[in-house]
Amino acid sequence: MGAIDAFTNAFSLVIRNKRLYLLVLVMSLMMAPLGAYLIPSEVNYEYNQTAIQKGNVIIEEYGTPISGNEMDTLVELLKGLAIYSIIALIVGAIFEYGITKGIFMHLRDEEYSLSGLLVEGLKHFPGVILINFIYGLIMVVFIGVAAIPMALGALFLPAGAILMLLGVILMFAAVAFALGLSSLAIPFYVDRGSIGAAFEAFGAAFRNALSTVGFGVLLGIGVIAIMLVASPIAFLAQMVLPENIAPYVSAFLQAPFDALLYMFIWTAGVAFYREIQRMEELKKVDEELIDLGIEV
Image (tube, rainbow, N blue to C red):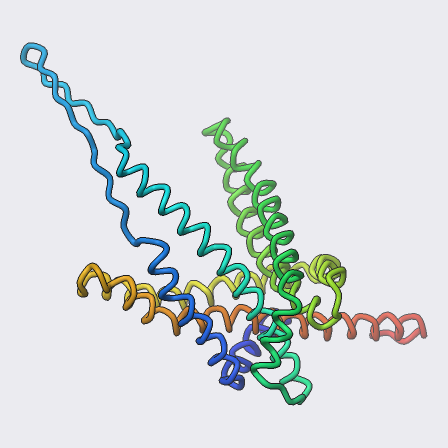
């Protein structure tokens, strides 16, 4: 029930914090033209084809030699991707901290200003980047461990089919748990005020493993739903508009949905954090009652 309560509360918090959504929308609109400029939507390569006839047989050979121009295009693509990733990492960390703090202040009925939240984000964005990086590595480890049964099952097919099925289930659970766990990290950091506090999420998530997995599943479904709405709009713009302006228009059309996605993920993290805290407090009360000899 904790996962469902947190998930539904997340939607309620998003609706009640329209000012914070506008702040995230500013971020998305700011990043939209930058992404369209630095990362081309299409990269064209010329494929080399040769045909050799041996008697009545024609042998066709295909190759992909990279010319000087193509190499320059690839280098520019990688350079643009690197520059955009660095900027997006910093900007995203600033806004993530600011929005998370704004949600906490809303829940405490405290007044806040959008500029003040951005200042707080500027002060704390290195911590957000560090925490997200570490939790990203943890997610990779979880997925890697979960993939082991699948790999072993593939080696011993058909007998390994059962092992592969168990591996798929384990992979699904690991990804869901990792999503739920990582959503707690920044709320712990913002609420407690120290980077070390972010790693208390481990204990909280493992003590409430089923709720963490359930919340991860719901969070993933919510993210996919928003992306499914946004993708056709961006694709249609790419298909209809002239090639030189299509990426920019598409990026601007997608920006409100990107903002909604970020707002939902960051708000959901706070909602789940609060629900975990409530569940932890209830457990402590139950333990105290048991110590007093009162059956719960």
